[in-house]
Image 1: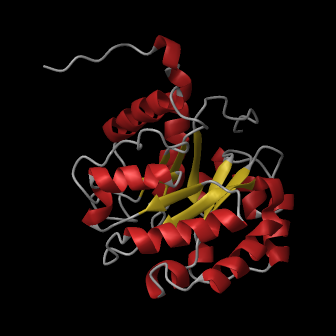
Image 2 (image 1 turned 90 degrees about the vertical axis):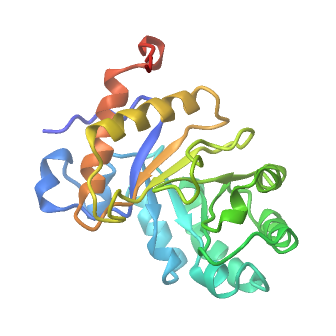
Length: 262
C-alpha cells in the first residue's frame, strides 16, 4: 500500500490532469473519485482542460471539495485569450474564467498562461493584459511563452516588473532557458516529455538533475516550487512524478553531496 504521509519536501510535485492509468493503481490509496485518489499521492495538479473549454463554478467547487486541505490547483487560462485574441481585447473572457475558477476557493494555487509559438512579445499589449489580470485576481501567474522574443534579458526584466514567473519548460524553447527567472516568486517546471513531447518517459539521470535544480530553487524562492509532468499520453507523468518524490526524499537539501564535473 502507498504511504499516506504527505510529501514533506519544499517542492510540490504533480501532473497535468489526474488521469490514473491502471498499471499505477498501487501508488494511490482509495478515494471517491479519480481526483480524490490522485490526491492521496500528490498535493498539486494542473487543470489543463480549462484551456480547451470552460468549466462551471460548481465544477471547480466540487473538485476543491474532493481533495484534502493543503492541496492546490493551477488553472490554465483559456486558449481564447492566448491563442485566438493574443492577449488583446480579452477582458470579458478573462472575467468569465476568473468567475468560474473562483470555485476553487483557497485551493487555487495560481494561474498558468501558455502562449503560442507565433506570439512575439509586444510589451504594450502584454503589460495591458497583466494589469487587467492583476486588477481582477490576486492569484500568482506563471507564463509559458514559446516565441524566442520572450527569452531576452529585456523580456526577463519585463516579466519581473509585472511579477510574472516564467515556466521552465522541457524541452526548452530557447537554449539555456532552464532555470527560474531571478526575482520571481513562483518557480514552475513543466516537463512535457523528451524526446517525444507528451509521450516520452524521462530517464533516471534527467529526474536526478531535476531534483537537484528544484531543490536548489526551493531554498531561494518566495514560495514552494512546482514541478508538473505533462508527458501524460502514455501515462509516464505519474511514474516520473512519483520517482521525483522519492529522489527528493532520499537526498535532503542539507545533506546533498557536491557534484564535480571534469
